[in-house]
Length: 261
Image (tube, rainbow, N blue to C red; front, side, top):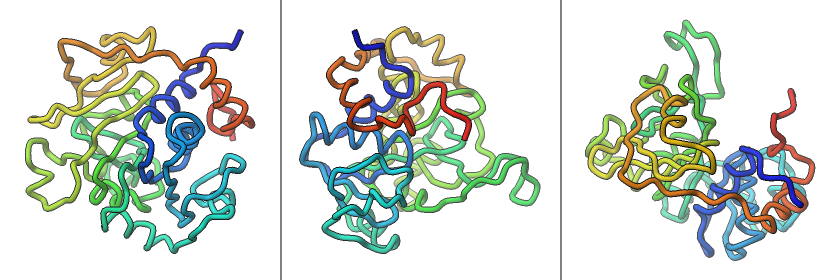
């Protein structure tokens, strides 16, 4: 009997479920890559994978170690400069994009710059925007990905790198940003979405064994709770086998607890 999915495997499966067949998918490093490749190998064989560094829909191969890994270019029909890759989002050629961050707030705004008091007085310097602001500002459907705890899902960002719904309500649209903003936020707990009027994060569905109380304990701001919370199914055994044997058999991203690198 197959061992049950660990939290990272469940998270990757939940990412895959966001993807519909035929979509053009802008793929981020880490578990978003795992989820996108899993979707392509299961229910969505006709998706096009777009990698940030420029690889476009490479042939099947080993799990890339990042969006700049050689496997993202393997026999790709097109290889573009990074600026052109981002331009695909601006020109409406991306159906769904996945994005992670060091901090996420209740309106889906993201911080990937630093942890600390200010730009010149920080505890930890992060990677910066990269293409994060392009994706969050320009793509039609954005899905956030992160490990949910009060330090990462925080009431106030130390720096706003990439906009979600800004201050809630219509503030994103009033700022002139394209797309519909974040449509979901996937963590090891389940799937959050954003209430249509206030644009505040709320619980949509939770993984097996997770309750609304647990989700709130792992969050640094108040989550909205609907009358009915969707019960997310465990990863089916056949899909779990594909995930472990065909997608990430070296456990680069799905090993839990992760290896210290």
